[in-house]
Amino acid sequence: MLMAAATGAFGQNTGSSTGDKPVSQWGGDARFRFEAYNNVHTLRSYGAHDRDYLRTRLRLWETVNPLPGLTLFGRVSAEPRYWFNAASVAAEGTEWKYAIFDSLNAKWVTESDGNPVTVVLGRQDIQLGDQWLVADGTPLDGSWTNHYDALRVTIDAKDLKTKFDVIAFRQRAFPGDTLPILGSEARAAALTEQDETGVILYAQ
Image (cartoon, rainbow, N blue to C red; front, side, top):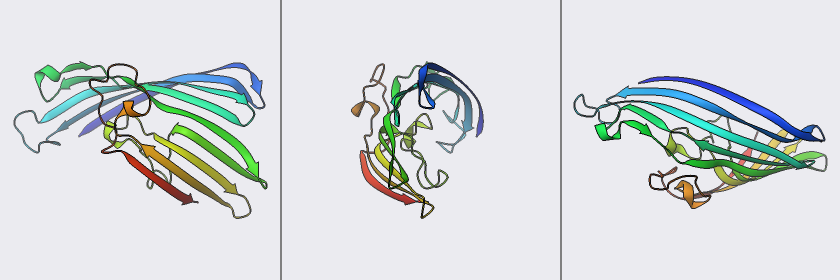
């Protein structure tokens, strides 16, 4: 299996500052990744056993800080692919994909008894334990997205030198089940193997 990737990003601040943050920030990034493999899916050396394609992930995001302590964040992501070798000749060429909101949340930062408290509600990336315990909430799309639809409360207990996370999440298998997708749903593929609901308690 062969993989090669390149990434790039840009950003812009707009509006006057609210506290130490600009009112609005926007930007984007692009990731180009070429993948090629042989006999990975079929374990055979005849027929449609090899695949090679270019994945182009494009993301646009905006952050808005309407009030001190409150941050609104949204990001749209798409990943069209170009297939050099596919399962069939008909599948080769450009595979245009829909775009989805892979992040859309509100974050509130406050204090309780001198301990910082952060509350994030909505679609968000969650990574715990160096991405070993919790990382990818949408494993079937091949790293296009990673999000969880969740409520996350983080308490930084200064006296204990410990951070506590309480997370409740609800994942829907298909991308259009929770938020609308941008484009045709005809080829919308599952992001998880089934609808999932859970709670995470984590301390570090």
